[in-house]
Structure formats: C-alpha cells, structure tokens
Image (cartoon, rainbow, N blue to C red; front, side, top):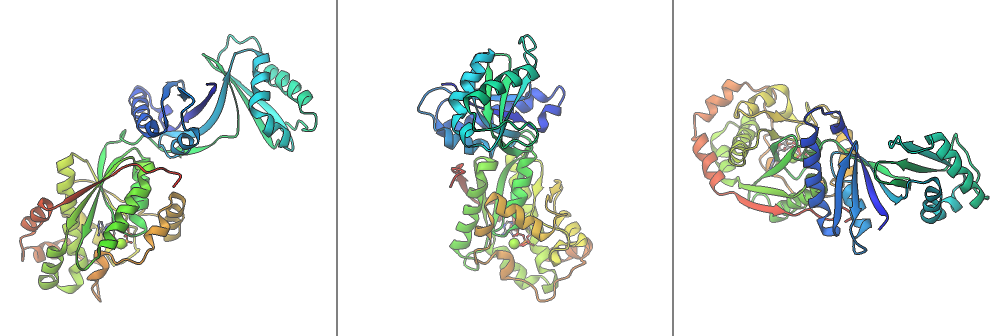
Length: 395
Ligand code: ATP
Ligand code: MG
C-alpha cells in the first residue's frame, strides 16, 4: 500500500532530552486508538509520525477521523509514498490527485526536501513537477500566489510523499505525558470542557460524579456517562467513579446553615475526589469552575473548597466567559447533551441566599458539627465504577 498518514508532531518537538518520552507516549496512544481500524506500522522521524496501513483491510476513513482527536498531533494528512525521483513524483501526483487537479480552479506545487542528497533543490523539483502537471491538466492554471489547490511534495529519508489538503490535529500533548488527575464531572456544560482541556495538556483522567438518588434520577446519571463517552475520542478510555451522595446531602440539609450549604457540599466533593485520587495515584483534581459564574465560584468560595484538600486543583475554564466555554463544548460535541434538562445534585438543594464570601474558618466550624472524614470514607467505600470505552469519533 502506498497510502499512509503523516502526522506533524505538536508542541512536544520543543522538548529537549525528554522528547523521547513524549514520542513513546504518543506512539502508545496511537497504537491503542488505531487498533479498531486495522493493522498499522508507526514510527517517528524528526518531527513527523508516519502511520502506514499494513494491508487492504484497514479502515482509513475511520483511522483518519480517530487521528484528528489524538492530542500531541499538530496536523494530519493522508499522503501517498513514491520513489525519490522527479518522474515518480509526477506519476504519483497524477495517479493520486488527478480528480483534485482536474476540478481545482488553480494549483501550485510546493516541495520540502529533508534528504539533502536529493539532486534537485526544492524549487527545481516544484518547477519540474508543476510544469509536467500543467501539461497534463491544461484546463487548470498555475497560480503560485493564491492557488485553489496546493500539491505538496516531500523528499524524506526513506521515500517521497505526495499529498494535498490535510487538516489541523487536536494539538496539545499526548495524554499521559503530564500525569494523572481526577476530574469532577457533573452533567453541566463546564466540566466536560474542563476535562477536554486538561487531557489536551497531556493529563490522563479519571472522572468522579456525585449522584443523589432519588433526588437526581437515573437519567441524570446516564447523561453524565454519555458526556464521559463523548469525550473519550480525546481522553482515551475513562473510568467514572459514581459516588452515592444522598446521605451527605440529607445530613447537610439538616445540620448545615442554609447559606453555607453549597460550599459545605463542595468541600465533601473535593475531599472524596481526593480519596479517589490517592487510590489511583493521581496528582491533581480538576473542576469546571469559572470565576464569578455562580455564588460558589467566587475567590473566597474557591479558597474554602480548596481548603478541604491538599492536592492542587486545576480549573482550566476559570478565566473563560460562558460563551467561550459553550463554543468549546459545541466544538467537542458535548453541548447538546449538557443542556438536556436533567437535574444535578447541586441544583436540588440550592440555598435561597448563598453566602458568596465565606471564610474558611466558618466552614471548619460548621464541619465540627458532623463527622466529615467518616462520611467521606463511607461514601468512598460505596463508589460504583463504570469503565467507558473509547467511542468512534465519527458518531
Ligand atoms: P458544570 O457546568 O460543569 O456543571 P456549573 O457551572 O454547573 O458547572 P457548579 O454546579 O457550581 O457549576 O459546579 C462546579 C464544578 O463542580 C463543576 O464544574 C464540576 O467540576 C463539579 N461538580 C458539580 N456538581 C458535580 C457532581 N454532581 N458530580 C461531580 N462534580 C460536580
Ligand atoms: Mg453543574
């Protein structure tokens, strides 16, 4: 097979001695992600990752779509390999790109030469191949300034490559290269976006969801599992830890002064999430909080929720406007599910007048009235775990 994918590596090419570790992580992730689409050979050379289908049975459409969701990849192109001679570049371009060349309004040829033993300069190669193609497709004019179609030629170590088009990749760093974190996943708009953003920085995630049956329904839980599933093309396989939260919320309703209810509840969430993090050896917590969005997301409120844990808390959407978060949610395909009208455990017990500037000392005093640690441990022991496989990104 002469068709293959060329993946341009992203930010990791800037890594010095560590670069190998990032590349290995990426290759491992690619291998897992492409397994459902057939057998592929993969290797990295300079700043390119080569992905070669090994037989006719490979699903190249499916693979292409999956590749566009893999973090660490700056761009993805489907290319054709050829011999490293000017004539074979022409033959390959005619063979593989004839439809594009025939229908384009104009074209130009651009060459890159990393094999310095190749006898022509890149300009000479472009001119030669461009001239031959102009003869073969006389109805398509050459336009070197603003072409409708650019035919790319690359002279690399092992072969020549011809392609047109290509798309931006998912960017970021390979998942797993920045460690592991536990993300608090609600059914809202913000937390799936937060997960996506941390995965993009190379973080492998587990999700925690707090579930208050019967105050929140099984549909609400299914919605969260669906949101987790929707982000798997980016994050890879996800484990969702479902924490029974009813007892804690009922206790708080009884014992916690109403204005502090939400913050007190969020301290429980953070602490239980930290127990999960300790169990799986994760190094941080992730939430979808955005500064000033609601009463529990003021600076003071965040200080109070953070006081319940020692791990760093990442809030990747903290500085984003709601419409920016929504824009990203649409882009990654979670928005429509997030706005389905199922109640979240936070909305069930919302205080009428929440305290917007709580002090850590006040929360600690309230907690002295109940067995905070014991309740956290009990909920932690009763966690239900659901493993979500990577779904087809085209769905
Ligand atoms: P989201 O859109 O992510 O639900 P939100 O704007 O509704 O966020 P809150 O309800 O205050 O804000 O929640 C803030 C963050 O707390 C969420 O982004 C999420 O990380 C976490 N969180 C809230 N409810 C839950 C829950 N039931 N299970 C897990 N995490 C939760
Ligand atoms: Mg919410």
